[in-house]
Image (tube, rainbow, N blue to C red; front, top):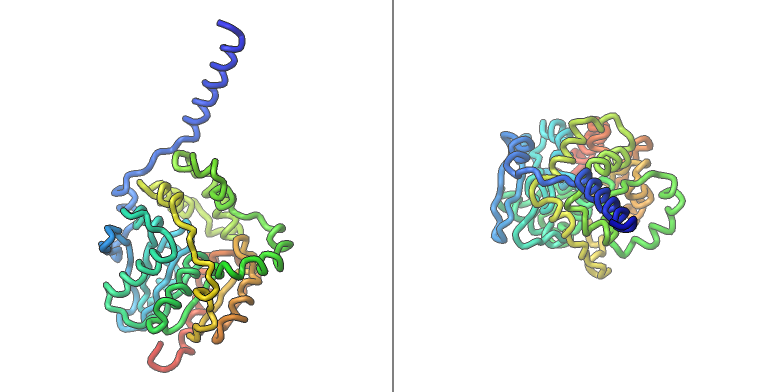
Length: 330
C-alpha cells in the first residue's frame, strides 16, 4: 500500500471519528413532550395538520394576555411571568411552529403568515375576542404583525426586545454598529446564515452552541443553569425540530405598506435590556418614534430575555402598564 493511500485512509478515519463524535440523533417526541408538558398543556389540531402546544392559565376572569416566545425558545420562557401576572390576568402562551412541543408541521409553514395563523387559531379556539398581545424577539415581530392583520382584536401590545420591520434594518444597523461589535452574540444565529452549516446542522450535536447562545442572550445571567440549558437542548433535539428550524422561512415581507406601524394606536409597552446582544437597545427608540401610543422601559443591567433574567422587576412594569389601560380593558 502506497504512502499516499495510507495518508488518505488515516484522514478518512479521522473524519469518520470526528463526525461520530459530533453526531447527535433526535430525541423521541413522546419523551420530550412528557418532560416539558404539564397539567396546563393543551394541544390544538389545526386544519393544516399542525399540532399546536398551548397553555391557558391564571385568573380565568381577568383580561387575557397572550405571550409569544422568541426564536429557538418556547412558551416555557414565560413561566415566571405566568406565575406573577396570572394572579390577576388570564395568561395564554403557545409554541409557534418549529418550536417547543409544536415543532415540525406537515406543510412546512414557518414564516410570518404561519405565525399569525397559529396565534389566531389558538385565541379562536379559546373564544378570546379581544386581548393584550406580547412577544419577545421574534415573538415581538409576530405580535405587531398579528396586530396589523387583526387590529380589532388587540387591546394593547407588549414588545420585549422585539424584532423590527425589515424596512428599518439598515438605519438601525448603521446607528448601532459600534455597540453591536462590543458584545458577544450567539454563534448559532451567525452559523445558520451559512449554507454549508445548514447542510449539516440537523445531524450535529448542538450542545456547545446552545450553552454559548444562552449565556450571550441572557447576558451571562445566573438563571442560565443546567435545567435551562437542558430545556433548550432537549427541545431542539425533539424529533423533526432541527429540520423545521433549518426550513423555517425568512420570508417576512419587506413591503413598507405592510410594515407601517403608525396605524397601530393601541397602548404599547416597549421593554428592553440595554445589554441585549441580539437586537440593539436603540431599536426601542425606533418603536417609540413610529408607534403613536408607546411607553418605553429600559433595564441597564439586563439582556435579551428580561422576563427570565429578572421576572419580578419586568413583570412589575407590565402590571403597571396593564392597570393604565382604559376601563373595561384591564
